[in-house]
Image (cartoon, rainbow, N blue to C red; front, side, top):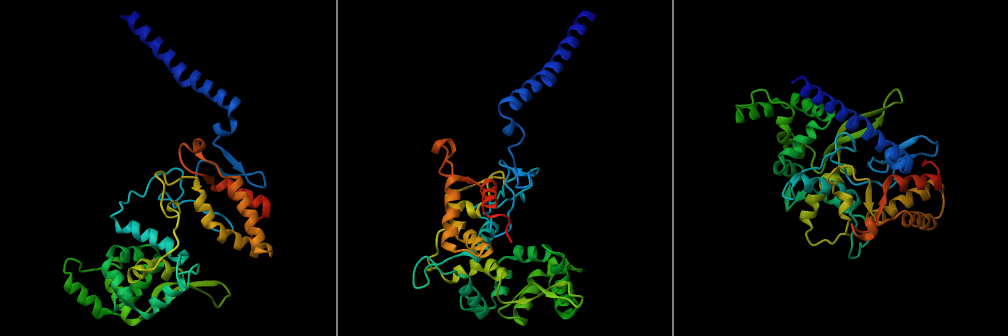
Length: 338
């Protein structure tokens, strides 16, 4: 019996050494000898020689001078790879995509071809009529309760603004409790729809949004105030504007500009996506460098084409560009953005 046990122990020890020691050491040695860049995470260094990211993992770029990656359901967190898991029938997906398109939508036909939709959207919103009925904000909240609640819970300043509103509208809260006896002590999120309905009546053609002012001490102070133009209006109400203008023709937007990847960390975008962003990037660099926009655009377009590649020589898809690699090339060519 002891002989069988000893053989089993020796086999276990041998397996541990082989699988947990020799085999990993062999793979590490081969990787470091023949593919050190890939084996160490495909890390790229910035102009100062310090690592700035991996070619394999997307990261956000907020400045207009840089190309932006696909949206990320994982918030670009490499430890939390995930997809959005939203079906096409889920309005949350339509809302997210619409919010991305609203501020950048451009007419594709008619007398305004090439012009942005945003000014017309803001004018429509300020008129405060949707499908011929007044109260755009109230209709938005009534139709999409979850979005109204998400606005309240998305930022502490939003819930604080609603709390302050409840203190000045005790009769509204009392009526809400009467209509909803199961919620005797409503929180800010519970009152989201009621809040927006009354806000729409008190401030027609406006939406509560963050506005930054210079405080008494010279420091910026941000408050929630009624606004009738800006990014919030353009993004939140673009889908409703589109519903009121069903015949309008807009310039096509690459699908990967507004959709997340399965991992939420896809580091590449299609060449069409990069070309769609080209005008914004070139315009901003031209302003920074105080150079001719047409010349700068040509230079950046050449950089984009130089960094384009087709996975598997086209077997696995059309031309792509790696966002980090592309932005580092811009930084190397033009220096740091202003």
